[in-house]
Image 1 (cartoon, rainbow, N blue to C red):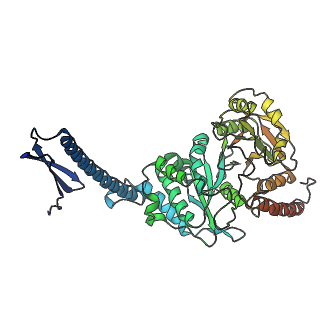
Image 2 (cartoon, rainbow, N blue to C red):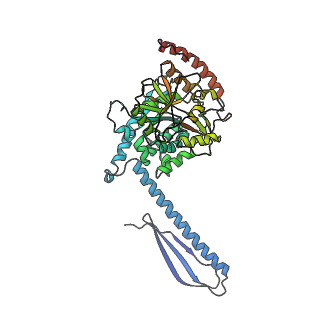
Image 3 (cartoon, rainbow, N blue to C red):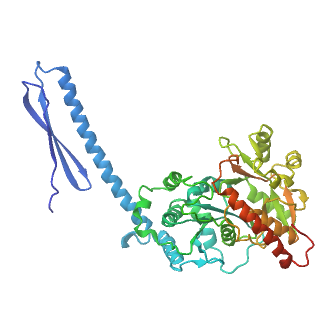
Length: 472
């Protein structure tokens, strides 16, 4: 076998009057190629200054460091090639070891091959179940949702997807995520959600990803997108990559003046959740701890009416504060002003019907027992967050960008005859206070346009529910 060419370096100490006594050879192997380092070590005469001795030693150390860094670089490159081959299937000899990963890869390839489907407006392309969780994959096709299941649905752009890590850590149950991407972010989103499903066991187990883009755009299999996978070695490294992409744009300020289809995304997330009950929140919100098991215990003890939704009072917290897990922790922060009602500064009327004072002061019989604290009739302009049966009316997808997207759905629930039961100790918290001036430039313009749309929407409800005496 032909030996790789050797690279020789000779360093001679700069002391005058020295005589050469010995040559020491270091042999390092880096991926099969030999690097020979010859260091000439000279006996130093008495005339050689201490400074020159130190300088010689520093030169030798510097060379060794360069060799070490070269070794690490080549080793890292080899490791990355191995990781990349893992992502997209290894050699035939490793077929069995990679069978599960290859199955995941083929499911993604199949999802993309469909080309997605267009939404009702024809403006957006939807890849439902782009990546399925193990939970969804193992369900029996065509089976009805079990009577005691609850899923969480959320929506986001790629720049806020980093919130998924803490949201799943808190929720720890089935989660359906609808992602909107545009332009180059379509490739980036496809690559990163595949990496998340590959490297993160809990995401593999519980999270379904759906992708929405413009109808003129298409997602492709990320096999050639090596730049998106460079440096990814584990789950933490994928979330670190997402962190570098965070807050690329302000809310709803997507490059190219593209409309963020929030209600379409909510419906996609809802439709992708195989559960009898669903909670839909924004990805930068957090539910109270143990909500899943507490709610299922509630509906087991108390059979809900078919026209009932369960309201979770919504709060917002200062950015620096840790998200409270229990009502006791939340009330303590509420009393000192670190937590306040959601949208208190921007639209206090939008959440006031929740009756925060009554909820905060209501007695909780036991820390593990969730109950209905009180029941309310909907009033304009209340837009509560709630757990509802999977049969509740969908969000109206004509609403995009800012304004009236959630209130329109709450209004329809009211006209359709639903009642709003407020849960005793469950809640949701938004990360950070919502304040004036932090929104994108076109917020007021969008709100004005959607207000006109909302008037038309309310008129349409009279035709949709002709026997209902309720109005918004």
